[in-house]
Length: 228
Image 1 (cartoon, rainbow, N blue to C red):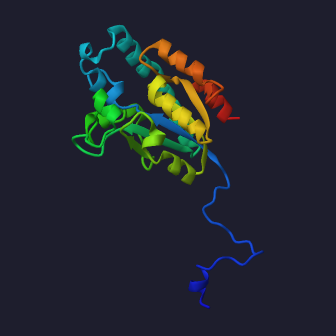
Image 2 (cartoon, rainbow, N blue to C red; image 1 turned 180 degrees about the vertical axis):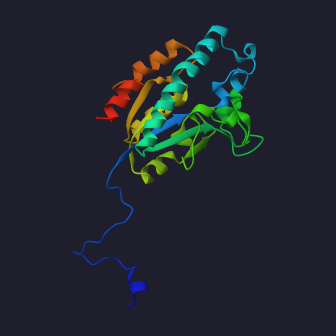
Image 3 (cartoon, rainbow, N blue to C red; image 1 turned 45 degrees about the horizontal axis):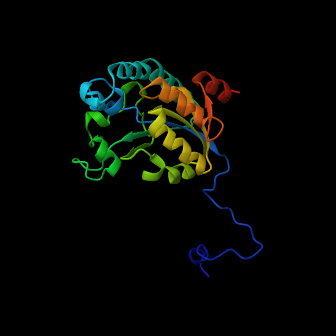
């Protein structure tokens, strides 16, 4: 029997074979959710016209200030640490497959959310944008796990724990956290690297998430734990 043929035969009972590709060391990943022009930058996308957004001016200003002064710098610090440790930094964004967005979920069509491929709205904020060879996941729904192959990807990358950052805390972040927890991943929400349109929504989401679906830590706490 040729060696070529034997490669495709079942192993005899009692003989151990090496299974290449199985995970020996499980790792952590940083999931950066929706930090893009569509919903994180003034005069773009959701915030192109403040009056038509349906959100109060005070809420808009609170949110944009928090993104600029808390979310972006804290995500940047976490990205730097994960990269230095050669851990995965995974970028998730809203972007359709088609120019006209006909492939979007019913939810995004109803909400008028659309970032076409190659558009400014689909671009990540430059301070926290992907660098060479980092994974980018595109979605057209709130829930990244139910609408993409993210779970499959994480298993392939031998990821067992995810740190979740980005926007909005009460929407896409909450959806990702709950799904990840249900699927058996260990989850941490970084409280000062996430934001909702109001402080009340942000805090309420963290309260219902903490110690049920995920741990909740600040950026400083996460970095201290990871460096131990």
